[in-house]
Length: 146
Image 1 (tube, rainbow, N blue to C red):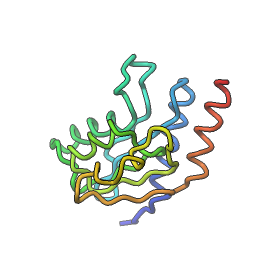
Image 2: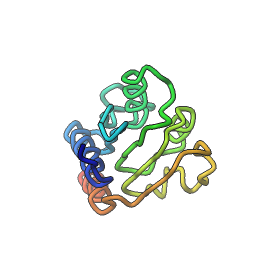
Image 3: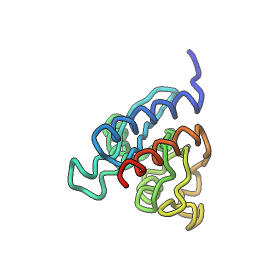
Image 4: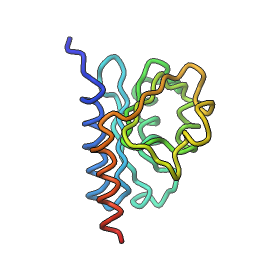
């Protein structure tokens, strides 16, 4: 069995972010991986669903939980193009996600400014994977908005 890299899965998350951008949503994409297999894919849908909680991470958590038949995602890794916000990291903590890997930091709304203690104690964290590509999506989206 081929073991895929963090970059491979982040590229899949970037594909989701690009789908969001095409739908005039903030371009955040996420995939959840279990046993080296993508079990959930999602992108922001707050505009489409008229729902401020419809972030990529929240939608991905729901899809992964449905796939596994469990509310806990202890053996899963979330790949997300942007640092999760406090709402999303709270949901990820409740889901006891095994690992979070994000691309671009979010200095305005990201959870890191509040401290890593918002994570579940057993959740591993990695960031900066394909950071330039992930940041560029956000920059080009908001540049076009202005």
